[in-house]
Length: 505
Image 1: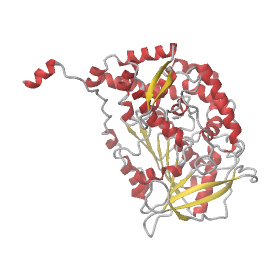
Image 2: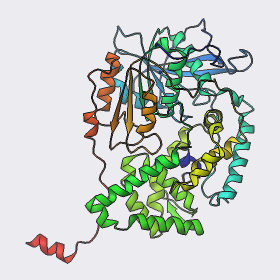
Image 3: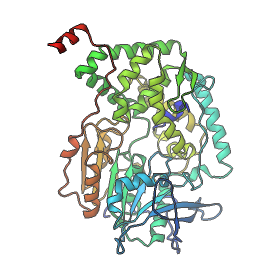
Image 4: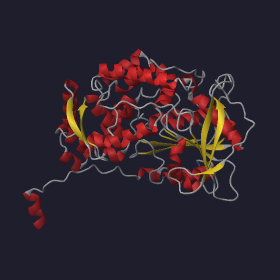
């Protein structure tokens, strides 16, 4: 499948802190129920797990009308005697279903699963918890290459998506705070006095919001690729992704082999982008999975979208110089093939409607005209990200937020924070903002990691030790600094006569 530009651009927790109180809309009411956990099977997990649903009111404030059956999967601890503080996984996105991550959860947290249950909850609007999704347009839809026409198409698509989903949901009831009240109901229904939390990307925002509202029920927290409460998603993408892009170019220049293979990389990419800004081109692109070739219209923005998604993963960023050089020569298949590795999975796994219900309430209202205008100067991405979100949210219903939603989360709970220095959307600076109000937090940075550190190198061992002890004492990040940046791809070439002569000697 040829990934949509939409998808590539959408890539995009007891002491102090505020209680639920009046400032937390739709706060939880403790349910007088327990979960009816039954044996089941889930994709990617060989052993039997436990599944259940928990009905919650869609409108938690009114406590009447439509209910949502929250989909819950518990990866049960293997020990006969287990700890009564499970690990809750907070999925990313926003829009990702936690139960889709069962296999990854076991790979990352399996060492903890002998004594602790791992709890996966499809946040309302994702997975099987009243999924709010719409099929995204393809890149080759007429008008997608022209920014003005694309905005009109986004408006049309978002309006149609809104109208379709409104048949089964009040789209104002899917904000993070409301969803965390659902999670509190699940905790109570499980009979767990405290929980441990693991959140990546948007999952760091949701876990921090849970910590804000229910601090007395949190034992420990790991957050990775951190979205700070003060961060308006997409507003900083141009500068953060631009910095990651500049780092890729600088690293290529500093690498002897990369510099030799691509001596004019920056100038070549600038020329390519300028050419496409003047006149998009139609070119065949071959799908790496099916082998089928299809002619699509290539624009400056679609190339930037492919660059952006590749920067998330250092292994993909290491191939960018070669892919961009090929694109400069008119062969766009390598660039869009690696983009598909990221973008297609985004489109398949992220609920677009839920994403808009979150971002249109929590992020876009904080955009202002001056901030949007300033994006134009942030090369090379400019206003690409904020324009799409602003246009979509102009027609999307917006939920209410608590007055303190964007305020720092204050807590003395132990928190382990992980960041990748090459992250194009949540670099370490955002995590530092969060850390300032956490009195018992440790921030570890992996210099050569991108968006998400938890699965890399020694990080799983650090996470295991932290969750076992609920303490940052004795944890060090030196092993994360040893993670190498993936080597830049060096294209095969014929050896020169001088090189052949040197080998003979």
